[in-house]
Length: 287
Ligand SMILES: Cc1cc2nc3c(=O)[nH]c(=O)nc-3n(C[C@H](O)[C@H](O)[C@H](O)COP(=O)(O)OP(=O)(O)OC[C@H]3O[C@@H](n4cnc5c(N)ncnc54)[C@H](O)[C@@H]3O)c2cc1C
Image (cartoon, helix red, strand yellow):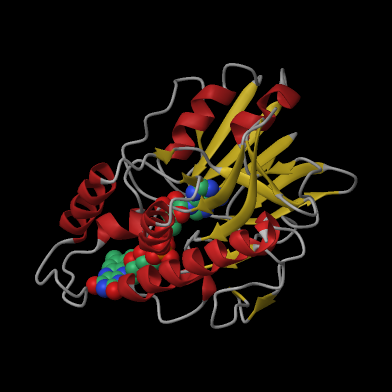
């Protein structure tokens, strides 16, 4: 039988981490998903002067302190990308690649890394457009796949897909020394639109176009309403109340994804509120 967690926390920035330490203190069974470096936004900050108790630190120093805190409390991050969360009545099915986790409550703390979808992206989602290349790679055996990568992890996915696909095009949305296999074609051009009738046919870029069978858009986060079908949004953020509750019972949100201002301490505070209210919700189910 699949283990059922009390809480699944999606995101390892300050919001998710603060939720995790509070869940631990309240003795709940939880799992936290995210990345080894915790948050790309955290490590990018040159100087942070508004995090109470940490004057004149770099984002990386703050990250190292967060890591030490987690280690001291024996909290491990599960480094998997969550692709979908489905409400199943009395629990949530949390999907990561081909794995499913079960949890009574979910805290969405995925940040605001997502950019506006490309023209045609939402219409062709599931019909050639995907957000997890490694999950869907077998579908594209012997076919042409194009990957629009927003971060360096996308390069790893491209390398994996190239073992199965007949051809992989990689369109980076950042500048770096790309660590790509020789067989992968690097396309340094700006994507404009995804075209296709029943399924994806072409990616139109600013100065070129690519015929492709599959197209993956790999960002740090996907829009929360795509991640959790039925989640109510307001002005581009997840709609929450003062208890960080969303419109879906048992689903909470915290941090940048729940609204402005985009700040570390606000995110950590909201993560705490979300976790404590999730604890109350879990306990109320047992009464
Ligand atoms: C350059 C820069 C400087 C900044 N300086 C400051 C500052 O000085 N002071 C300040 O207060 N704020 C600053 N900020 C803002 C601050 O970084 C954000 O407000 C804060 O990181 C938000 O925290 P969060 O937990 O909501 O999300 P994030 O820190 O964005 O973390 C979200 C995490 O969730 C992960 N994730 C997303 N989707 C999924 C998924 N589907 N599955 C698994 N994991 C997922 C992401 O990979 C990421 O690790 C700065 C931001 C930048 C970019």
